Length: 457
Image 1 (cartoon, rainbow, N blue to C red):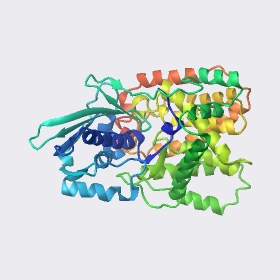
Image 2: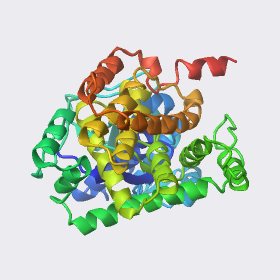
Image 3: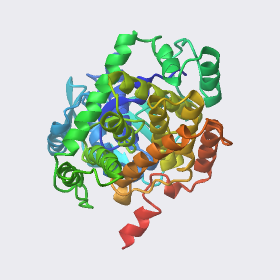
Image 4: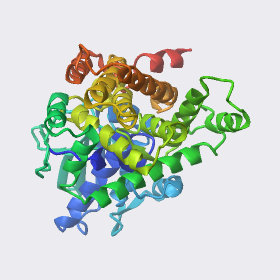
């Protein structure tokens, strides 16, 4: 399976890539399939079932909203985030929805959208089933999907086996491991960003790659700007107060020249701003997931604001490098909190950001790979235990801490010569094995850890 940087960085909607973006894409795919097979007019209602982590924490992650909007034909990348609540309220009030924007059908959320809190499908914790019924209540179409992290959705046969339709595009330097990537760098003398760029040219021109990545960067910056301007409490029952605006205003007022760690506060601010926007259902970039969406933008903002000579070309190289590490993580590890815990989300994002920063600061491929390994290694075993099933506690602060760890990892790697005992591939293998051993209650089910103990208090 060939993965592009634009698969890893996609424009979406908060609060979760696996629980919001994925279900919206799956629902729209099902509706589009009905249209493709001429079944729209025969469909009178659609039944949706969400399983595993989707069923357990889907309400806090906005999964029901995502399913309803997806059935109406909305895409995560261009849905009007300001209109979401009003549209969903109208669907609930009328008990109808406009299937793919073509036909009004009955849809009663109480009976047609089932959240299975304790049942899972066999292939992945984030499973969904959709069925279309005619006027007599007869099923005329059905399909199963899995949201496998980062907004990626795959469909499944009735056996429950994942059926991924791979992109078979031939790229110049194919790789799926860190070892293979470094071999390409050694053979060609190219940095990691240029190896990734050469592969991207299989789909787009160099100008198109640069323009697309700078658009991603624009969305990240818009997200930070909006996050720094909002006040009040985040949606959900926890009433978590937004902190980014107050911190932004304080940092603007301060000189900062007497504080050697002033830049660290800015990094934290950038991450808090993104993840508060994500938690409120705003427009974000999956990087590589929504739950970890603040880390790469925060470190990239650090590069732009505090590194002399930072420019758009550096931004492109940063995102290409992060994408190369993301390909390895996606191919050989996991970026799904429901599959391996938060080590797969914040740990992966930290590794990607650390590698990217090391590259734009002049690191060799060996130093860049070392930075990625350090960023991932020191998140191994990190659980996903969102309080109340919301992407707020500990997720928002965890992104701020992960961002500063990424900078630290890059600096450690750049102070060395690239040689290290634990290669990135071994750290990823360890992450996957640790995730397999991890109790389900620590994998985005809100049934353990902070999710349990804070509620008890």
